[in-house]
Length: 194
Image (cartoon, rainbow, N blue to C red; front, side):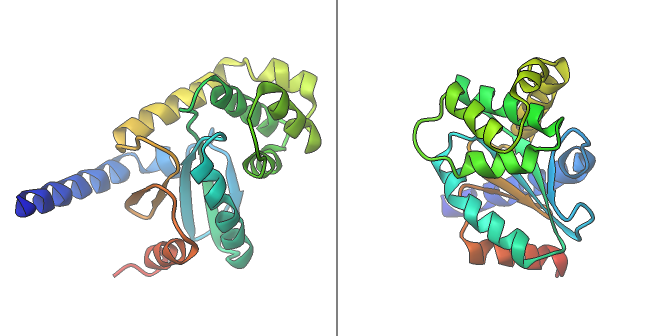
């Protein structure tokens, strides 16, 4: 039984690597995905997240630390609102904030927001980082914003991402929260493979 499980894991990992290779541009270079850190960084962390996910919020300080310590690190944010209507609303506001150049500030503020996430809380966070709320309310209903979220849901399905957070570093998909040492190791492995 153990051998069968090990073989299934090997096959799953090989399939995921093939999917990452085949969909590399969609994962790492999709112009509709917000980017943080160094846009020309030599290693990219892709994060699928939900603003209502406590594990995503738990990993946010680690991501911020990595970005401060490693000036060659790039992060691609994949809005993956799977925890209900407020999650979808937050993703739509985030992408509307991006149209105003406020995405990263909104993202960090939302991830650091404690307590119940409601539409009012989301709009207060957006306003607190300088987002024009009237414009954001209009922009968040744009078809291209729904398309970004739809693309991310489809991509997550292809990558067997079922929950949040999930990370892609190099050719690896890592489900669940990571600790700082593990993330540093993944970045080092991606930077110096083999």
